[in-house]
Image (cartoon, rainbow, N blue to C red; front, side):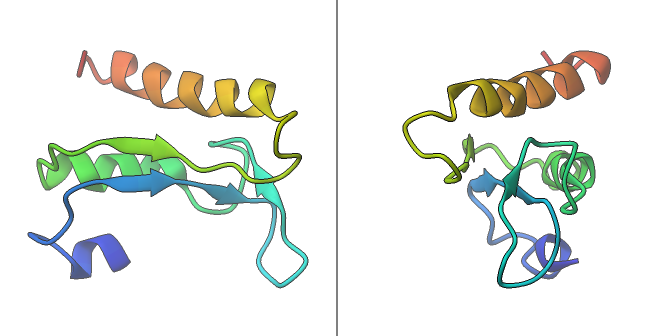
Amino acid sequence: KAIKMLKGRVYGSHLKELNKMGPDAVDAPCGRGNALAMGVLEELRRQKVQGAVSVEYETDFGQNAPEVGQCIGFARGWAQAKKYN
């Protein structure tokens, strides 16, 4: 909903999901959290956003490479499935 409201003003985005809503929430791999990452990517594509989409994953900083990799794999898999590569 927020990305739709900002149409024409989005030049890039951070892709992040949380395991739940609330102050004790922690990061979750994209596609496995509550942010509906697929819907975010769909809306960015619909608006023809050309900027970078970067992964934001702060939980277990310094030891979260597997989870960051899952997020990158999620975005790449989504693009491949949609034939956006």
